[in-house]
Length: 341
Ligand SMILES: NC(=O)c1ccc[n+]([C@@H]2O[C@H](COP(=O)([O-])OP(=O)(O)OC[C@H]3O[C@@H](n4cnc5c(N)ncnc54)[C@H](O)[C@@H]3O)[C@@H](O)[C@H]2O)c1
Ligand SMILES: O=C(O)[C@H]1O[C@H](OP(=O)(O)OP(=O)(O)OC[C@H]2O[C@@H](n3ccc(=O)[nH]c3=O)[C@H](O)[C@@H]2O)[C@H](O)[C@@H](O)[C@@H]1O
Image (cartoon, rainbow, N blue to C red; front, side, top):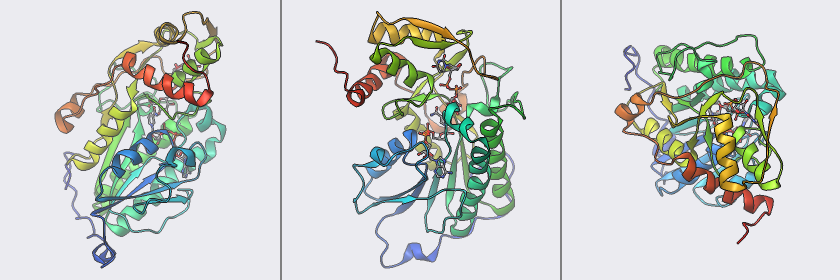
């Protein structure tokens, strides 16, 4: 049983007897909610590399796409279900990576009531599933639980500075409730939980018009449009390449610690520095345009990853300057903009 300082009193239920049936082939049946999205589809790729794994994706395709999983469709160890996590799901699995939730601010603010339902009812449903079948469940929480942080860098012990009634609350308060539910199911029902607090992650397969800053700047540079730096431009983020993120999530799932554990790259950049870097790497001729920001935008964000280092033996390997060209290559292919010789 994982430890978090408070000993859980109850043992988790034993795995479903169906797992021992004569049709049992894989050693691990893994559900990934939101697996058709950006991080989820990279996680599917990594988990499918292990022939002992059977992977089931449940996704409603709100921000994800079957295209992200095309190479696995029809594979005997892979299954894709169109499913909204706000509805119950009755299947037999050993592990649940619960990612389902729109992540880009533009998309999570589009239908905030649905975002809250996804975070609250969706997480309740997945915890109910974990309880029924005795599965271990990992939640992809977010650095947004720290809100507009007054401590810097952010440690897991920091309780955050979140506006409960703002336009971002459906997402950040939604994820905070999801974390609460995870710990209540752990304490009350002995469910094996893992919580990752993910910091800004980027890489190939992000939606081209996703609205997040790295995808925006790369798409704008390739289209020859101005890079839109939202004011003041001095706000900071720390960007983690997706392969490092997936490695961290799997280590957390396989390890003995409930978390929450920050998973992110501590390299911190202002948005103006990010724009300058993209400009320099992709097209020095593009211009930078300052535009209005949105309410409650966090002014600074940088993970303290001491826990991930110590408890998971994890730290990121890919720097921003190494990761941006990998994403540029993918965006060039999808936008049909070849690199000039
Ligand atoms: N990428 C980041 O920087 C970042 C940072 C912090 C946390 N996270 C978390 O990681 C997870 C994945 O993020 P991402 O960047 O891959 O985003 P994404 O938008 O690409 O993926 C989310 C996936 O969830 C699916 N989905 C949304 N609502 C659903 C619902 N009700 N039922 C079923 N499926 C649903 C979407 O269709 C999509 O495939 C999210 O939980 C997000 O909150 C991401
Ligand atoms: O890592 C996290 O925890 C969270 O980070 C992001 O939220 P945010 O940091 O606001 O992401 P972006 O929309 O990419 O914005 C980052 C910064 O870039 C700025 N920005 C954004 C877009 C743009 O075109 N220009 C620009 O300057 C924003 O003002 C903001 O300061 C993700 O979208 C969330 O899913 C995630 O949970």
